[in-house]
Length: 153
Image 1: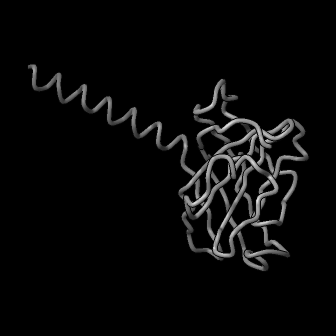
Image 2: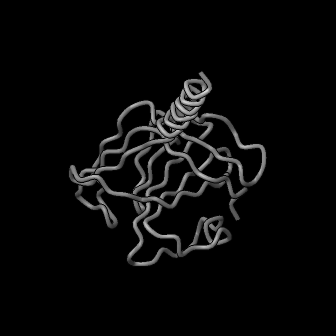
């Protein structure tokens, strides 16, 4: 009987972990091929929160908070911006900004280090006309979580 109870408890923890993972999963495709931007950071800027997705972790938290930082040549970056003005909510691919993206903020962070999740309510599809993603079809969907680093500088 104890063994069955242990198995049930383990199964419940597994299901809870899977639920949490599925709540913070998002996908990015470039011309139909999934790309991975595993390094995620969040900053508050004006009336919105920016989740910045990067292909590397060679940037400090202070550099991430600087919205005017220079981006390295080999950096791939997607930013999901949830703004209090829904028309300003956007997805930024490199330096190209697609405005008016429908999304919702799971909850505002209370302190630095809190996790934050932005959920895209629709699949986003567009072709940037400038930058590293120029003329490539981007498809972004799901939810994206990141560690909150504080206000931008």
